[in-house]
Length: 172
Image (cartoon, rainbow, N blue to C red):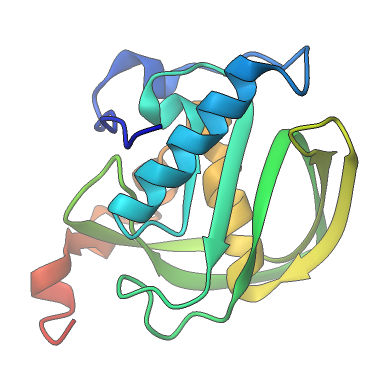
């Protein structure tokens, strides 16, 4: 398939709640997921949500092995997560710098839950149920926010915690 254009902050689709996926294992869903992985790889992303490429469906993908945009991040397994449900575990929060393919060139310091459980389905409709923490939990929360029309700048406590990557991290 191919890498697709990523919608940027300001596009109305990014602020809408995405629709539930009703059918699994379809050629259309398989093509969407291939395009999402191609797009994420082409842009060195850690994850991607279907609305970011103009498809209003509750589909997210993520994977981190070695990523120049997140050089210190721990590995996150390749995951296709459809119709996710998040259960936040405990009250411990953690601040971390986030970027987004829909907000290119910027990073923001966002507070996220340190631990969570996520459930949903893979592309064939097989259930997924994982409990995760740290960067993995952050990536899941960030991507699932996209499904509810939330971009990370909307989670900032203070606009001064948002800046251009080259100003914040000149050595990256």
